[in-house]
Length: 306
Image (cartoon, rainbow, N blue to C red):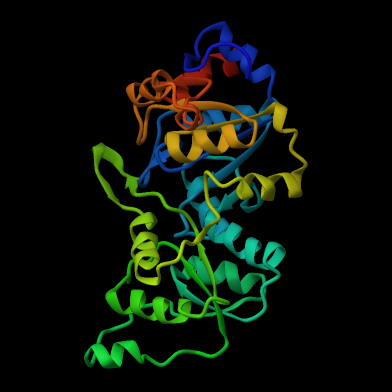
């Protein structure tokens, strides 16, 4: 994007920028909602963008829901959305295994029922969802029974995450031919009122440390999620905008993929964070500097209503 970076998007500039894009990709947590509460004005912005002929998609690193469940949540909040508009890391991880890795075999899954469902929807069998209670001693743990059909370990959000799950994943990953895939490495999930809970990255890092291997990350800032959207809907990346609240995932994704980037200050990162990256002079940190910022995506409403 030509011109100065980290510019406040307001006034006549909003219409100018929106006129230059055909597609808008929104993150979800901290952008259109916080927890179970919609960001005020978010549904109106999304619905008006569609009314103005823009393609609108949702790219979220959260793997705790299927596309259908996300669409249902958005409908309840007043968003005009279909399941096909949603690209979560549960769905994209399944697509990565099927279309890129050409995976044959069973997955040991540290993850949710949503991730299990998305894998099954593309014909991939899995094992591991639910609690894995500890028993015996260290010798038993090191010799835990393994499923010989398992050819990949996938780590996503798992409310039943435990020592035994880390151990079982490590034993599978001792085989160098076993694939190791993670949905994302977000460290925290923002909630309403400034609260937060640990993110999937905390789980991924634990397994990586135990296995002494690095996972292939499907989620933002990896460009595969944009690839998924582009393959299905034919995006022109030069006329596409990424809207997010995290500099190290949303904004870096947009930069990596050649998209216009917009930071909203309703989630994780602050304007000071972006300005610090901008002033650092570090090329890698420049990737986390947005083209524009707004206090909230509701700031786009006047231009859309005019």
